[in-house]
Length: 260
Length: 270
Image 1 (cartoon, rainbow over the protein chains, first blue to last red):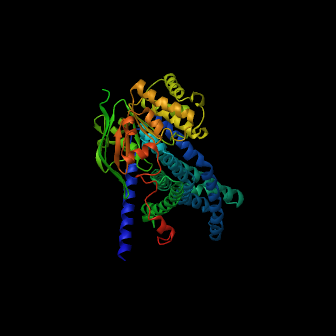
Image 2 (image 1 turned 90 degrees about the vertical axis):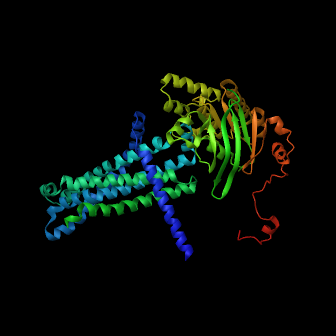
Image 3 (image 1 turned 120 degrees about the horizontal axis):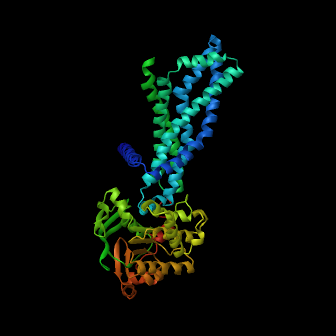
């Protein structure tokens, strides 16, 4: 009994300590004036983290939009409301599916890669030798990756939405025969730029920060063995998925809670 | 200036978990000399280098570099201080996304505003010194362990630091490059007046170039002196180490329970 309580307490202390470390880590690496060279490093990372994730995010967006239109149509047609298909596809994508699914895919595609890369740099003492050369790895290695993720994911999310809406049109209009004018017209009439597009982008900014933060911190903080790296990559995907889904509920409640 | 202390270690205590690694180590590393730190493996020689480099923080005691307390510096000041030191890692620790040339050029690019032509000249000079000028376009993954260490040495001396910390520079080198490395370390010290700390258990090589030797064991400085003094030392522990005898007061085995009792199964589950 006492032992259980003690273990619980120790675990609590461990968690608090690592949260503190993670916070300090974020503050030390993200804050600072970027140099010209820093911008070049950042661009390189935008390529690795953002551009390379484009294919998986866009293809998923296309399929999700197509499935949404197909499922939505079969339900809406019962009520004779199939002309509202465009509205349904666009709102579900912009408010929920695009930020969440893009963030989950991003965690799997880019987050795990970031963790493994930084972890391997740590295991092979590259981070230590950088420190001994007098270069702060937080500024040189971590900061460009953190900012690249923060900028890339919202852009990927917008791409996801655009391709998804187009996929919905492909299925709904071209295949199932919804009138094209009502697909686009209803969408235009009901989607508000600030409330729907804006809130979606805010969500994805929050997810971008959380997912990239978890990924680089797990890489930087891991135990430098092969087992440590494998555990840390797993943790990155698990923690960021849970964080994204949990935060999504909180954000949705804050943004759209009073609507109902 | 020569012979004044460059690095001073004062009653250094350091532990990892429950294991005490240093229990009061005092050491003076004179300026412009080669100091060898030797001792059986597992005595924390690499840890000592990391403490000097400010990567680990001691539990108690002080380390001063040229009069300044290494561990009392702000993060920023510590990074500035580190530009005065070079460290050669046992694994080389080259940046795996840069080729050999760029690895050696890295410290020059981040810390100086030299024009590209000058950087090229400096890099080629340093690579020539370690005999790898022809390997400049290889990636670290294409190098053997010994070559990687020589590239790392070229990188460590790229900025002409005042202090170089060598972590096991001779381990795993073939006889030819071992000889070249020994000469190179000696030459760097003679020509440029660098202060060098060599951590090694290649006794013959280390003694051949060292001006002063510290032997650490069991968390303490067991003996120190010039190579000839130590060679003639009558302390059985020192002479066992210096002459590489398997039997003696320094145990070869990691601490364990009695061998007979362990084998006959009265011990734990394993």
